[in-house]
Image 1 (tube, helix red, strand yellow):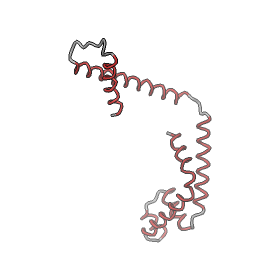
Image 2 (cartoon, rainbow, N blue to C red):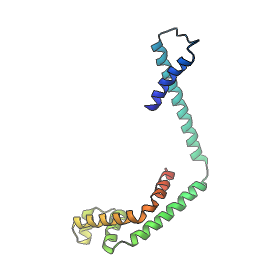
Image 3 (cartoon, rainbow, N blue to C red):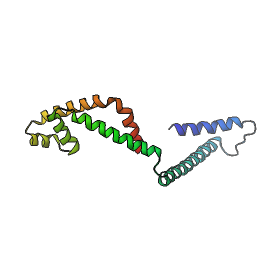
Length: 150
């Protein structure tokens, strides 16, 4: 939307800058529509070229410092998360592992551990709160690793 508004504004600005020598042989309305239409097409063409260059760059560049750094940080985060998980109380750790690693539902975990689904939910809340608190200092690093992967 912002880009469209800018194109319209640029069309009016061009007319204003050339007002001394500006002549329209058709209607002003038709001229403005055509100017904005052409500007839109040029913008789309430019974006396609940019996308091709980005795609080429991604495909033809070897892993570099940035990807190595990203991988190192990801490994460090995994180790920190694993240490934090190890600090959970035994039953809480078991519920968390069954839920997040083995991807069991709360009902399946409750049945397997012979506890209620509500107890499973309470353990998960406690585990996630604990991990969030333990890993809060690493949130910017986690975001950077996630962004650099995409």
